Image 1: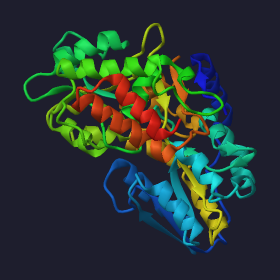
Image 2: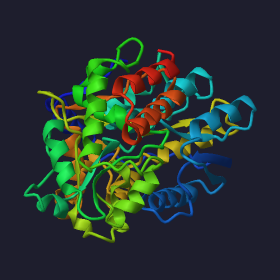
Image 3: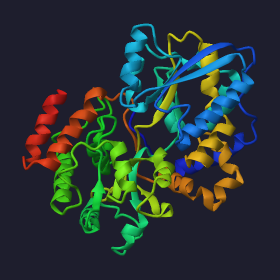
Image 4: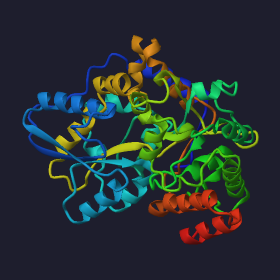
Length: 431
């Protein structure tokens, strides 16, 4: 699959087409299923975050409909999920259901660890639910005709969260749309103990460097190899922008080991005016807001370079699959289907503030209310001209993000030349 660049017209057409499926009943299964379904997820069934609350409700509904099936969620560190799952599959101890990031799909499916959902999903689900999901996400999970997983929470994934009150201090309602304008504004937002911009630099599941690079558009990824030019003019320009952000005080050279959780907690305490953050955590950021009013939290795309539109990179995002060695594939698939019922989609939306997986539910009056304003903001990003995806077959995924994060740390914390840092990254990747 080539890197996708989705037009506003396409997404609006898809939204309109979704209304055709409106009114379908919930996806159901025969009640004669039994046994245990082990689920590996980064969420806990006992957790308190908005997404965990919704997951717990889904499990309750599924268990009520299938009283002979026991769902056991075995929470795992999200940084280790995919690699740990591949190892467990090779050792015949894999769970029945696995949550994965889209960037790892090729790696996991090449190891033969995923079942082909085409032969497992119910006809009811394939007829009613599958066409109701967002095609750009659904199609990416199909490798040579094999459906490896189903996408969860259609969103721009890693994007920019900002405080409207902080932007108002410099006379702006939102962050600038180009890096040339963004850099000086980020510097002005550094005030006292507050920094203008915060980036996770030690989170091996994402790369702020690649997110910034997406400001050049989908052509940054080679359609055949999935690689990007680590030492090319575009990468060098990104490196120079990072240095400019350090020089004007927007980025701190002391924050070289920040994980996503670190950025989240420090943002809540007022440490940053703007940060890179994971879109599905938007409500969580609001809940823990301490140094600012929750209603002042907003979301923006990544600034662009030159005349390109602001970038909205759809990934890494979560997908859910069934293990090829599942001991209970029928019940496992039934549980996976329950994650995509209309009730589940409304739960993800109302409780967790997420764009619903089922497009048909967007007809509900709720999505026209002020309470759904955040979802409307994310929908606007999904319909923007700068939308793009990671390549389906991204090489060396276990190395790409860590290597580029090391390069980012060196760009922020050292005076070594941008070219030397990127050359070392390229050599480490072996590209």
